[in-house]
Every structure is written in structure tokens, then in C-alpha cells.
Image 1 (cartoon, rainbow, N blue to C red):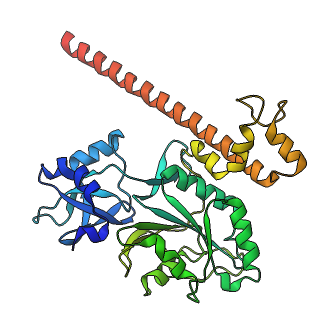
Image 2: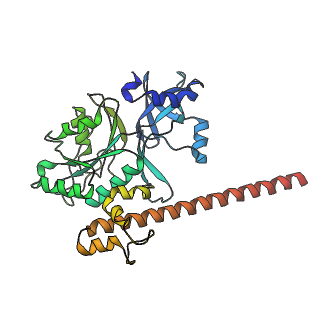
Image 3: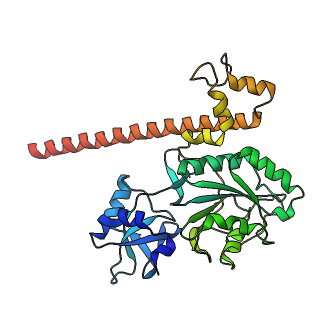
Length: 359
């Protein structure tokens, strides 16, 4: 298997050079499931586990857990049942959200992707949400990838044009495409973003048809699909792991499990690109540090008053700003506590050393 078929290029070859000098081999993470990884190597797919050195780096916080899409340096000695994952190459892009219930840790959803398809659904379920689209867009922009909004199940919608316009209002500079993965129409409009060697990822909640969309792009039923629950129109988790597939045209696609929470990680600096109208108005406020909450000469409040600024959009902008500020405070506090613990351990080690000398 030629690794160029999986996205390998001169950039990755240069990044890998120090590891090649150690006799390691390159591989791409193609599957992640409950702490286990499968790697695509030139010799084929192999299961992998972290080497001792890499495990120490993970425990010390000097390295991140490998994610689907990562390129890795691997010890592939044939005497071992599993390859030894020794290092992860620096990522080009990284889509991460706040780990559920942990404000001081990021969960990487996918690495080294070129485009993220933000999937919603136009059926009677709960798969279409402007606020969720804005959150997803903030996550993708923070991660450095391109975004495309995909409105699936359009065959079940009576006003496709109206829903597309709504989505466009929430993502003004993003391409919005209505598709029906089951019926098969509209799917081909996504293929230009998945040219040979490019990597895409499907992001969205359960029940919006991500796996059906993956099957349509693959041209075969590789991913299990399921119906939404009738009693509350919520989707069932049919995909429980992240996996990277090669498409017939040479592109690459990551399918992911449904996301209940879409809390962007470290997206504070990218909110202006998600809400460009707010950023443009803020530039005309009297005070540079205007909070847009009643200060004199506030251009944002003036626009809200005359209706030229969407109140829903502005309220969501403020909410995301508050959430990002809270995250930063939690991370700072976590770093302070970690440093305090480290110095306590050093002090205890010194005490133990002196006691040992006295004896």
C-alpha cells in the first residue's frame, strides 16, 4: 500500500526525517476505539499500542493521545503482535472540543483534516440547530480546517430553500449544501472537497445521517445506520468509534460518533470569523474594550436597537464568549494547581533525601 494514497506528502516526509533516522516507520491512524488504535502502514493495517517512552510522555503531558488522522512514528518489529507507537508528528490541523465534564482537557475529534462537513438534518427530529452550527463552525475555525454545512434528509423537508437560507444566515461565508444520503441526490456536490489525498470529516449529533452519508460517498454500505427514536425523535448511536476510509476517487473521509456536546476548545480568537457582523460593528464602538452591554457609543447596541443586527446571533456570540472565558480561567487554575503539586513533590523528595543522609 502506497502511503501517498493515505495523504503522505513531502511535508510529512520532512517532519518524519528524525524518526526515520531511528529506524522507525511512518503510519497513519485509521481507527480509534476505547484507547486502541489501528494504523495504516505500507505493509498493511496493524494494531498498535504505545511504547514505554511514548506512554511516559503521555502521562507527563508532553504528548497527546493519537487521534484518527494523525501521522505516527512506529516500531514495527515483526516479532511483536502489535506495532509500537513511538511518536505522533506535529498536526497540520486539529479539531478538538472540551472533554465532557472536564473543563481543563481537550478531546481531539480528528487530526490533519482539510475540510469538516458540519452535518444537520431537515427531518422532524432535532438535527437542525443554528446554534449548533455556529458552535461547530467555531470549533472548525479554531482547528484550522475549512467548513462546509451539509443539510441531510432534505427529501423529508417541505421548505429546503428556507432552511438553506437559515443556515446561511448562521454561517454567512460557508457553503451550505442540501443532500439526501438515502435518495442519493446532492451527495456528488461534496466530492470536490474530497480530491485525491485530501481528508474530510463528518461532524454532527446522532440521528442526522452521518453514516448514511459516509456510505453514499463510499459507494457501499460500510457503516451501520439506524432510525431515530419515535418517542422523542432523538438519534441512536450507530457509530461508536472514529474511523478513516479511502474513497473511490482517492479522497479520505473520517466518520465519527454522534456528539451530544459541541463545546469548542480554545475558540475565543475565532469567534469574530463566526460572527463577522458583530466584529465589524465592534470596530466602530467608542471604546476598544467595549463589552456591548450598555456602554455609551456602542455600535453593536445601536444595531440591535434598529434591528440591523440579529438579536439571536448576538446573544449566542455573548454566550460563547462567556464560555470561552470560563474555560480559560479553569485551565489557568488547573495549571496553577499542577505546578503547586509539582513543587510539593519536589519539597517532599528533598526532605526524604535529607532524612536518609542523617541516618
